[in-house]
Image (cartoon, rainbow, N blue to C red; front, side):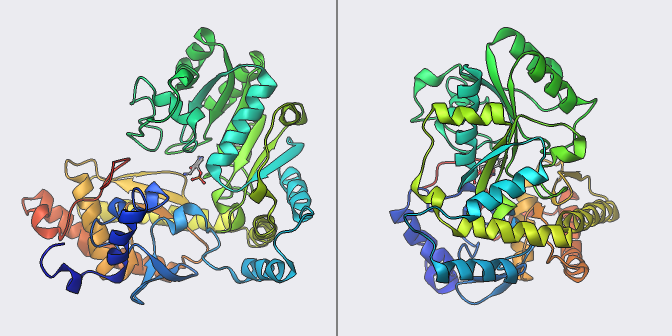
Length: 442
Ligand code: PMP
């Protein structure tokens, strides 16, 4: 500890120091590491969350204009109707020797929303749902080799893409993921391809015995020249199982999968994140011929039978459908994107705004981009706003709050412009620069 540091740092940072002694890496999710936001200064832990507000351990209140639980809460934190449904389940009992009926209702609802699908399995995390999908798809295709595009979780099957060449997964959301502990024998089973590069995926299919293609429908920018339709046709022609990983894209632009917007139907799709509005529930949906392969392998887990997840999902879907939440968050996200561009223009700064509107991210194509990102987080935190360069929009982000966000951001863009004109950004930063991607922490 630096001299007298204890007197100035918040309770959250003190707890995080304790955490690093007992939890390798300090926490469970890379994206919520304080170092990803503001090393040594990020409040790190919450005592309470409601709507789009979060309170830290010292009782400070913040407006969350950042990752909103990393995309879990499109209806805001602690949605009253979802919470009430969960409370009812709690008082009736969350677990028993019998199965919960909600899993059947949820499966039926997801099929109704995606008429191309006939069957559903449920899990509790996105990575798990991805592993389940890969197992079923490999069983159905009878082949080992998978082509992927995007981020699909932490499991062996996916990280094996980095065996031998640890840059394979760069550009697929998280750079630098290390595959230590992943059996070397898995090398040559997973082949990444770049989004919108049809020649690349076609060449892969021509040279490798690919049985499964798994991809995100959209990450940073949308499909060009019928990319998704071409991948669909390729998969159909070659008898390949096509999987859309909608863990992040689902429920943000359509009621269900983003693929509905593009009119392309996969053989399987996964949902996670927003499905339970903050409660743990993920789903794998698919065509009967593929999904029935689940019967020829073993996929089974104790807590996939608890009742809170499906209860929360059913109520979340009901509220989403009634409120057309995907339209509202898209509208808000579009507005945020336009205003970011306008603000950059006002300060004569170059900016790149990406992503589906309800998941807007931006960056400055400048040498000091990471320092500027850190500066934004540092200065916005002082104004009671959690902010980075990515905004997961929720229905609680009212026009007034968006105005407040931009009022706070305006002078920071001005500061960044000053730095581009010679002022030292290092002098403005009160701590270390934030991390980008995966890094070993001590
Ligand atoms: N697939 C996609 C597309 C994701 O964005 C994520 C999470 N960022 C995952 C899978 C993994 O989900 P989880 O973190 O719940 O395991």
